[in-house]
Image (cartoon, rainbow, N blue to C red):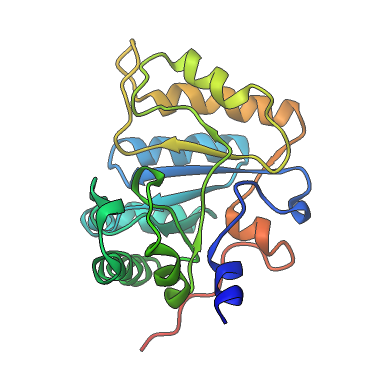
Length: 227
């Protein structure tokens, strides 16, 4: 059982071979009432899909943007309820409560139960995997990170993300906690168009994590049954 549990709870850093020329844009720390709508518009303009790792408390504050993410064909996944900076120091009980609260919040708003979890700042401890297994979640990491919460130079963030971009990459960007560029814009809004153009030029398709792991069914998943 432990081996089966480990296989279910850990997603490889890159997408599976079945994703073909797919790449995954993952966007963390939202929803943000000003940034998320503009990110959605950019994705629509380029015909791209993304996976949004949402914080439960922010989802509760801005449910309309969680609903919009799903309505526009993207995926909403679990990024914890409160995004505590000491997340990796929590014990198993506190981890379960924090992650399960976000599951309930996000499912209640979107009608779709998250399948993936990403830890705040990607930091985790040995207690996390059994908790994810019990909750039926897979841990999602990334292969490319632009550090767009720290770096104001949008060109530098873009270079980090695009250098050697290849099929099955998982890119990390942020709509929440986004750094501001030298022009005063959230960095993600300056970086995303360049990333989307580069992906199209390289004939790479931006897909959700759900679609990458289940291409025969793709996203959106069926809403969770009401209880």
